[in-house]
View 1 (cartoon, rainbow, N blue to C red):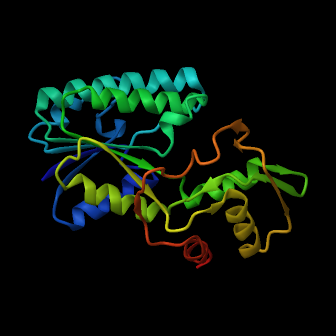
View 2 (cartoon, rainbow, N blue to C red):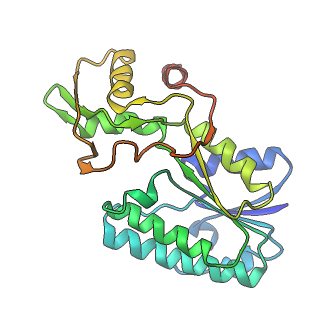
View 3 (spheres, helix red, strand yellow):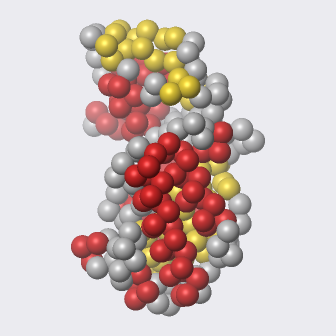
Length: 249
């Protein structure tokens, strides 16, 4: 199959491109450096010629509501229009677990805009909602640090390794469209504070974890289980401990 990946140079996109190529698919890495720009629409028509699958892994450069909504609206409308014109057989996007129930967060509003554009396009699709990545746990710790203490909520958390995310995106993209939302997450569900504690301990980080029962994610109020799948999910196989070990190797 011929597959166009928008956002092919990012953490997930680069892995997906390699995996699809190793399976023998013809992969086009869409980027502005190659004259393919989802924000302006430039190059999309040509890039999508005789393409079977469009994978949208693009991310907004801003997490603020206004710029993020504008970004996903423009890129989404451009991609949908070009995909319809090209007769794309499968439109795949990567979104976030809990997007629909965290609409008090501007970035989640923007991701919902992206999802709705795909759902309403009439193109066969699969929306993959991923739990937070293992790779984001150190960022959570840094954001929550005050002096040498790390204040982190006991929210339910089920992070997934980027490698597993790439495996799921690869596999689901070459399957028939589900025309639905597919949740993916890691193999372990614990309190967010526990994952941060395990990270600090494994890295021999001198900062002290201070768990709290405030239902907050990066300082914003969310439901207790907003960050984990509600009705089951496809689970990755890389544990958090395995991921940490891999970072140390």
